[in-house]
Image 1 (cartoon, rainbow, N blue to C red):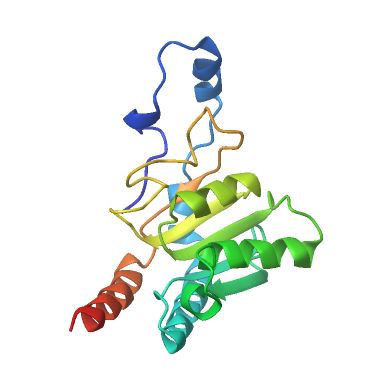
Image 2 (image 1 turned 30 degrees about the vertical axis):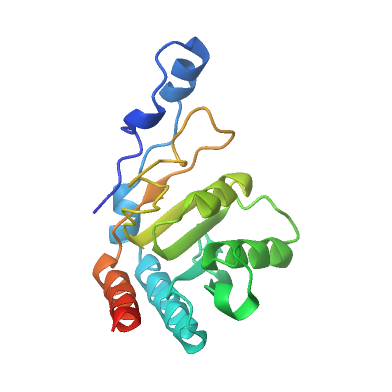
Length: 188
């Protein structure tokens, strides 16, 4: 499933000329980016490997990788560690963004790509905006908490301080299967 950043009715504003002006310049989704870019598939495989590491400490299997937009050079990678760290903010995306900022010596990650196995939640999508991320690619959509297309679209809301392109559905089956197996085992 590819996410269209331009059609999120929940965040449409029709009474502000400033918002309308912003909407004309908002970033577009680069659908070909994930499908044809030679390193995105490898980065998603790395994110899936990270997600599997979360299973070792009974965390929800989500993995994230931050890489340079042009070269695909990996800057940081992480998996969920909420259970391990007893930290509600220890989502894979947050940990990876923090590590990338430290590695690059700047909080501005505009030249970076975040690849994550599950659609980011509002906290993580907000962190992407705060970090001025260059692009987000995610695997499985999250109908219950997804904030980059499923429930909200933080990446294209013109009222927020930073808009960024998003590509969804990259290897969604693999990420979704990992999550389904994890939650099925929890319910058994």
